[in-house]
Length: 404
Image (cartoon, rainbow, N blue to C red):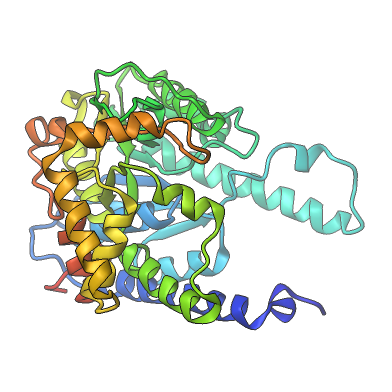
């Protein structure tokens, strides 16, 4: 039978294998983390642990689940779209349920397919999984969603199916529930390079950012009657297997293969003056700190590091620590980084001048003061430099720690 892999070019096959190897390393790290006893005290076996339910055990969701499992204070359950990944996570203490939030109701009401009996079985399986999820949610003290709006950009798929269950916190051990929604700094729109904070009015200017903002408001509509809701506006996410380290290596391979030609979208990203980014480990730290604060937490937290910086600076820094830079590139990196750090007025004007450049998704610099003052979070990776240095050493935090 013809499969995607059998049709792949050698280059595509190589990339697929590289991505699979990266995922395997993350899964292995999760396995080691989940099987390592926590040094902190854990509840006695006679005291049931509170349940944290994570919609979307993807990159951020798996990092959070691995950390909570390692620390041992919560029972963790969540959803994945892939059965193989679910089995791997279950084997290491994370109860993963297979549910695809992007397979809409139209699949169930559409015309019969040639495999109608298989479709019927699938629909019945979906209904069973939804019932299982609803039962878990009814007793969950914490619910975190990393699931984005669906492809049609008109709804939040989690709230569409489970909104009523999430509004009722009466079945939780404490009679209250903490809910967190992972959003994006894109909801602020284009600010011409100016600084924004959590009090800045949102002005989403693309279909995706408007959908994010609508989803935020829908999640906050759950608040009340024992339900606390927090939105995490995440910057560009990087971490093990997903960073400028991989970009630098890929760029080197591409240069050897075709002279280094980049796509139009890559060139557009290179022109951006600012990217507010955050290491996945610091995302986990913020979410867990807000969980501890509970009903006293603010409605919104910007989750970014201390230095909005151009993507090209991060990539060149990665090339430098990997030993892939030429002397000319090193000089350019030093000059660009100095400009970013010491001449923000000039950089801000550059951002304003580039607002209309094709491919520009909105220039802004995002403040992170609130996570420090309210949550007491001290970023482990305050800039991309600390993060990339750690990744170059093979650091797998938060999927595993150095003490694991």
